[in-house]
Image (tube, rainbow, N blue to C red; front, side, top):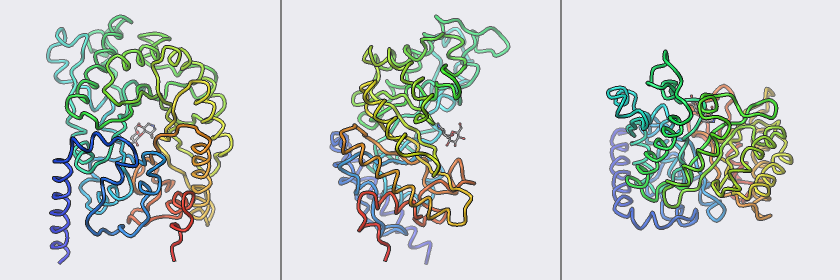
Length: 391
Ligand code: 9MR
């Protein structure tokens, strides 16, 4: 019996997927959050179908997204939940340099690939197909990062026992990598991506300096400026260029980020700052709001919440506290939006607590059985208290 129902659901999903694919051109023209959410109604009943929908509630405000991993797309209930709640997604790991750089091909002919390492996009294919078939837009994550980037990329002969590449060579590799990724996006997935994290987590956690990393060591102090310069040169149509970081609301880090992004903004090469927002109930929403205003004012950029999760505290009533905090946090986002701060997308970092990178801290909005948590209703209540009433 259960199998039969699943088969019917699969067929319905495939049908809705096919219809959306056929409608692709039309859909890619509809780039506002509002038109996206209205064009991707779920047509079949799911475990979670009676819930208020975040993407519908916030349709006139911003895209509402989640991080997605390929294995989640094998779970039909999870897939349906994503379609119901979100109109944007980020590949959790599959578009990072260690997924895209093709070591085998690059090493097969070092001279040929010396200035332009080979790339492939196998890892993210299923996620992007899912997004395209179901009317979700995508944030590209991420191009230039100190982490999840293979060390061999930074060596002259791609050999970690040899010499580091010099500035000139690394600038060529950086430019060619960005060019290859953006040309692929423009050719294979026109209109799918609306933003891209060009540089991720370049700020040091302590003090007023950039994080030490191989990009900094090989290219030098202006590697962030160069990354944005190349990104602007090759950006696909409709894609906003972002700097993205965690703890971006902390005063020291904020000043440091503004400081190194100033020349990038002056050159006209950045469009947005991503507040990752891996936070907990301890995070002061007032100073968070101040930081958002400051980025917008000092750099003239839009803002996105790119990776929200809210870790639980150790109290017995942590779920209620997390729910209350989620509401307060979201009310601050709405207040900022109403003040005129251009907040264009709001992404939570995963679907369920059990699939979170921080699963011990139950930081998400659905539990492992896809039940909505008080934190989900907090996000709903901030916009529509009536819709958040559960009985
Ligand atoms: O959620 C991602 C996790 O699955 C990976 O193991 C981890 C490896 O670095 O990256 C996580 O995502 C990170 C994101 O790409 C950048 N900001 C911090 C996120 C959480 O670590």
